[in-house]
Length: 427
Image (tube, rainbow, N blue to C red):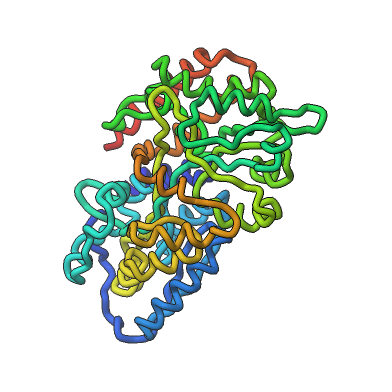
């Protein structure tokens, strides 16, 4: 079991992708002063979490929280090393891609019994969010944020091109047509930009909108042999092919957000979690950023929804206090701070107005709340990071116009299915 655990976690750590019983640690010393370490990877969310932790300590004077910030590229390598030495932080972030492996290998502790003992209303957290952090019938987190994908657009470029601003009813064809009209090669401006390393912002959003699927509901089959899945990939590669989106070599040198902020890209599919960063841009401060739901594909415009999970080690040093922090972060009190700080939407829908209201002076985020209402589950399996890397490797030739989309997808279908079949053998 130990060798499987370390091997599997090592795979995750290399990629940098963003016992299952109760903890064997004793709860002794729970009345004394304790400082918990809290690991996260998002720098721009630190101020909001500091406010949440100040409130947590106000309610629990004997417990302080120290943030341990590690960039996403190194985050899971560090967690792997800590798991092997028994030195994991008291509470740390996981995402739906990584959670199944950590839970199945007994690296983290289920919290069902502690939730029951505390009387916390677990139903306050929507079931769809809880299911992202449930494994083998056990709950491991009380996730308290909701994310989706929307389109941010540059109002100045739309005005210069004399184009009407996009509406919620727009379609893929509208998006592609608009991208071509916004493109100005002499000015070094593209209508949009696409990338393979943006997680579910790219093909994992467009594939289901085409009627295809990345991963079957039972997590056992890949959908890349399906022509509808391939259509979701082609929608993006076509825009690179016709010049309305920059080549991957360009976005490798300058990230898509920077291109957008500098007025070099007119529209971007992007995560709702970037709202704070976008609001700080000069473009937003001039009131020139618009936000709209993603365009409608053949099967609609739902995007994958996700949530971060706060988890604690199976052998926590301070299990009682670690759970107290997890429960607080899953509470409405924490949600209100989270939303007011503009970090994102929360599990508590009556806090949505705080999040939207935070950005009223720069842009309207009501489209985010509209998108959340129809969001679909993020496709994740036991060891998602293996096939996520394969997805990038195998689709890159198609995005670079070096291989037809069907051929690239056929190779990915074979490679990804092989990875999923190995997962079956490990269960």
